[in-house]
Image (tube, rainbow, N blue to C red; front, side):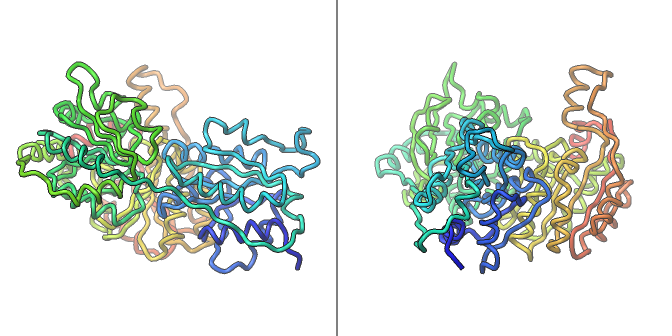
Length: 548
């Protein structure tokens, strides 16, 4: 069989260690699909929508720390994939998007479904490329993977003209470029250690730059204990630090608690590690405080462009999170007693994340389902969340240990829960995977339940059904009380829908049946959907407050 550009690209994927790609097929890249046929150690996951395929690839990148790969056709396919590209950009996840494009002679002639990725995604993607010549193919793909993973990770889009993919070429080897992993200088570490030694009330804000690195998690715990540092994690990064450790401050989500806000206001040093310090993690760009009485900031990130972008920075260190933490562990910490500050942090954590199972009211059906999950979670369970108010129960009630993982959209994109669960189940088939979705988010990407059934993934999906777009509804009720407009939903029977897909379907209608139904669903081998009937107008704040 002749050697084609498509075969070279398939070799390049193998050279970069790509074991899986998510795709909705298109005639524009059939030669590449053919080149991947029968390849060992490569899994092509055929999805039902490009949006969920791109979200699954982004979740896979978060699990592995290496670029996720999604393959789509031009025009509608690439447009549908935009949500995953945006998530990768917002959340600094390495993603390579391979796009089947119009054939070379018809480029620029407004051919059917033609799209210009560079113009469409210029502000969002780290790099966009179009392969015009066969001689550029290996180099372009190598650069794509290097760019996606270097500095601030993000999405890279590569257009593949369909006639070029089928072009025969002399057999040649794929190539691979390196990825820069900056490490701190000795002077930077001396300066950082001096800042930490001088601080009486420091706080660490740790982001997801090293989210897939188990060694980083262990080193972070050691650092926190050696230097007596309380640790907060950015949104959807609750798995970075053991949630039962006394130094864990909690997660910084969209709605910071008053106790967290008060604690951060008292800090005299903010240390940001592995985060770009965006609006959510800094409580609307108010932490660290700029004036009056400005708080000192030590910012550690592998991309110099992210340091000093929003805040006056006392010390910026261009380094990966792991390299910085390991270097700091090699410095002997000073003799300092921060026990009172750590107790204040523990009090704030429990006020924001405390959960008393016995005090969950009967009308809070979801709360009782969460109690059942608490008792059934394993040490290595992977949790995924969609976006919505229901996720507050997950973040407050479920305490994650060193081996647990949490996958969700930190930027608030709906539809992440099921695709992330799909990615997790494929990557870790022997681990318990539980996805939490709202009724709105599930119906955006829930068709991937068909993919989960096809693959026999042991995925459990909890759907909080309150017959509304709950988060938007809560804002609406606050701003325009009694004037409901556009936020009500009329939903299908989710359990019956699950059974129609070939999965197991379950319903929790009342609090007293939550434990039994969840036990039955979790005992099923294979995909299962658990619909939780929630009261439409049940107040989130009152429910969570009652469990303190």
